[in-house]
Image 1 (cartoon, rainbow, N blue to C red):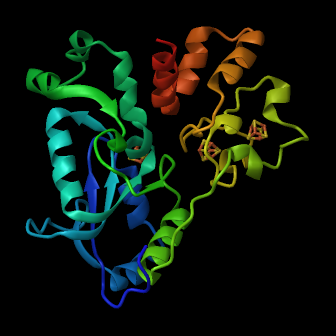
Image 2 (image 1 turned 180 degrees about the horizontal axis):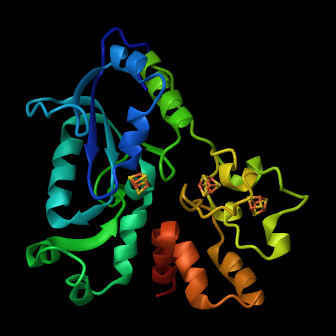
Image 3 (image 1 turned 120 degrees about the horizontal axis):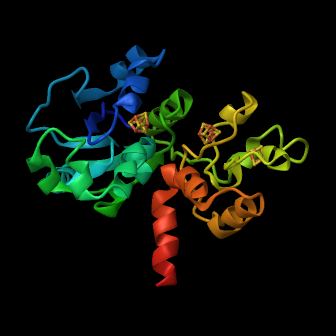
Length: 255
Ligand code: SF4
Ligand code: SF4
Ligand code: SF4
């Protein structure tokens, strides 16, 4: 980021294929009005019409890319945005829409409204497969506190630093009563932290909604679950929900 700003940055929120839950998370911020006072909001699909001529200091993008026409739209958006932030698991990793990647196009026709959408369809992918992404706000949905910390840093011109390390680093069960010791499939060790291990604190194993750690050792995690007797299909279902790109990379590295 480039020092304290003496102007209101022009900001836009853009949505590709997703449930728009991350956009709603922003709408539900307690401090939304204070944030809106400090920015020049030119587009937000949920609350503000598009100003077609606008160029953006800061663009937030939610959703995975699932069609050829979305690729073209995304590239145009990148060309007119100084800083671009992927928000949510769909934009960062393909997220829930990437479940479509396990289904053949011929079978997809059963679940979609028209044939034309199948012809335009591609594998669901994170936005960084097509454009440069400056920052990622992870999670499904994003965390309110993390979004606030990011935008306040941006407005005041401070560099925003994301949490580095796995969910386990913030986990109260680490070294004491880890779910893995109970043979429960907790994915905290291979997942980007920064959520304060929210689910684990509530007694629920991590399902990797903040995406796979860059250094995640998937083969070791898979081998552990196999030793417990978990079926390959179930393991891939767990790891593939948010970690599909990582699994694919491992497959490609083998070939
Ligand atoms: S990351 Fe989750 S909440 Fe956000 S848009 Fe995607 S599916 Fe919805
Ligand atoms: S996040 Fe899960 S795997 Fe990591 S220490 Fe906590 S319970 Fe164990
Ligand atoms: S504990 Fe795991 S599933 Fe829960 S919010 Fe954190 S990363 Fe997401």
